[in-house]
Length: 139
Image (cartoon, rainbow, N blue to C red):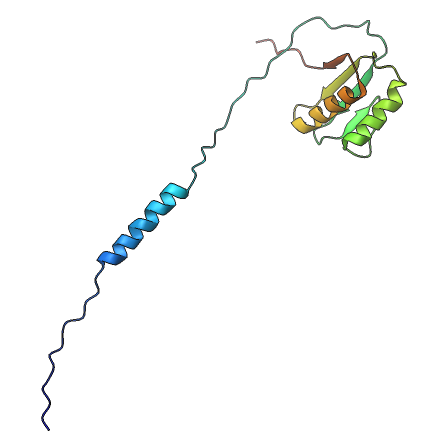
């Protein structure tokens, strides 16, 4: 029996569908990706100039160090939770919410620590709240 020889066709891979799929994936990722623009703000914090008051009545001093630890009238708190700050302020205030409350925070103090102290004072009803600042450097 004699078989007819088949001619071998050249094998080739069509790249057009592959390129189409790659472009579709590229478009999908471009549309679905959210680009975040990170900005770094440089702030010039306000400086306070004025006269220092020396005839202050009895006051409550809340000191906050760079790590966010609280010291109220010279007594260090064991926790930084708002409940601890409220309990300490209630003990020191002796029921008088008209006593001035002075918050002194380190420049590197986390903002949340200052807000926690202010929130605790607000929950207790303090009416006189002040933040300490430093005098501007003479240039």
